[in-house]
Length: 130
Image (cartoon, rainbow, N blue to C red):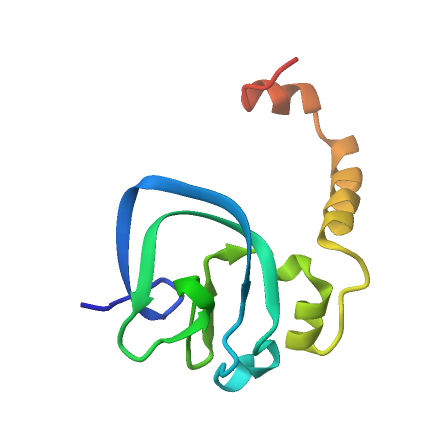
């Protein structure tokens, strides 16, 4: 029976013992509903990290080929990570590309926060002390 994900998408899920971790590409469905139409047919490149599979249930529509994404009204859930690292996909969703990459934004955040941190303490607490 379908169950509702935390995102509000009714899908069926099966969990497996093997962990899938891989870089991959997939296309958004050519017939995405309503708010997601701007992504229709576009390629998404990223990575998957999961145990098991998801499948349709309760009216959810496949949004990304291979059962890697589902749309249900105004909710979109995808298991292929990397959408926000592709400026052309962000532009399709919100009308404009970000002024810089996600990596650049995270580098700027790191540069702003690092001087205020006791990095030796952080590394020791994280178990990566040198």
